[in-house]
Each structure stands twice: as structure tokens, then as C-alpha cells.
Image (cartoon, rainbow over all chains, first blue to last red):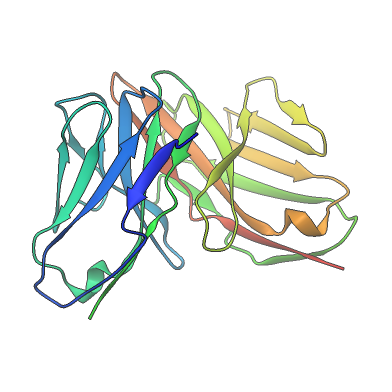
Amino acid sequence: NAGVTQTPKFQVLKTGQSMTLQCAQDMNHNSMYWYRQDPGMGLRLIYYSASEGTTDKGEVPNGYNVSRLNKREFSLRLESAAPSQTSVYFCASSAPGWTEAFFGQGTRLTVV
Amino acid sequence: RKEVEQDPGPFNVPEGATVAFNCTYSNSASQSFFWYRQDCRKEPKLLMSVYSSGNEDGRFTAQLNRASQYISLLIRDSKLSDSATYLCVVTYNFGNEKLTFGTGTRLTIIP
């Protein structure tokens, strides 16, 4: 049972470099999310997608772009990485209604 | 004011004790409430949903107080394995669901 798969698990970038974090779910969920988690800040929503073809900004969208490629995949792109984007990134998905959200294992990103 | 607020702790509790956390939310239109558990350097996982009438799952009891806009989690007979961070989650469902997390409460059970 794969659930939510995130890649890569670890990444070190230099300031100004770009990268895309990949996320895929095999549970046929409509909603997908990208969060970042920093010490003392909890999980903060970057972007979310309620369905294929739609995306909405969350609490901290600046410096990020997303793409809901299809129902399974939701990618997060950093166009020009900054040290402030050093964080742990989690992708999640959920079905419509008040149901459980499932998380990927996280991506630990360091920007130097 | 943050939408969902929790006491970050840490709560250091002896094994076998009872511990309770509260979480307050600011949006009275909030519709769904959950407690998630997160172990160190791992992803969050659902612990339990919180229903209006309150609900219990073994040693864990969750309560919702809509009038005062808070939810609570009670852990009885705490075990060493309960050591984790507990995250309060609130959702707003207006066609587009959005999960909003509290900052989490860190619990350490002491032998």
C-alpha cells in the first residue's frame, strides 16, 4: 500500500537554484496539499488543490508554485531557492468530506 | 491571532498518569476537528476524529466545545509509547476543504 509518495526525501540546494518536489497518491483522493513544517511553527499550508485542475494559495505561498498534473500528482516548485525555504515539506491527500488526511514521509530541504 | 492555537508544552508526565491538552480555534464556522499524532521526524498520522458528542478510543478521549471554540484530548494511563507531538486540526468545508493545523503540543512520558 503506497498511499502518498514524496520524492526526494532529502535535498540540499544552493541559494538561487530551482527544484520540484514530487507527490503522488494512489487512493483516488480529490484533495491534495503541500505543507511546510518549521520548529515552533507547526504545519503551515503552502498550496492546496481541491480537485484536478484547481489550486489555491494557503498561508505561505510566496516563493512557490504548484501544478496539479492529474488526480494522482501534485508537484511543488521552488523557482529560486532561498535559505528561508529550509524546512521539512509534507504532501498530503484526503477524500471529500470530513475524512482522514494521509501524509507522505516528508522532504527535508536545506538551502545554503 | 492564529486560527488554531495549542500550548506547545513540553508536557513531561510520569508513566501511568493522566494528561489533557486543549486546542482553541478562531473560526466559528469550523466544521471538522481531528487530533493527529506526529513522532519525531515522521509524518503526522490521524489519532482520532472529534465528534460533537465527544468520543473515546481506548485510553484516549476527545471532546468538542463549540460554544467556547475548543477541543480537548485526554490520555489516561499514559504509556512511554505515547511520547509524541499531538496536533490539533480544524477544517472548513465550503466546497474547497482546507486542513488547518495547530503548532502541536509535545508530550514526553517519563518512566
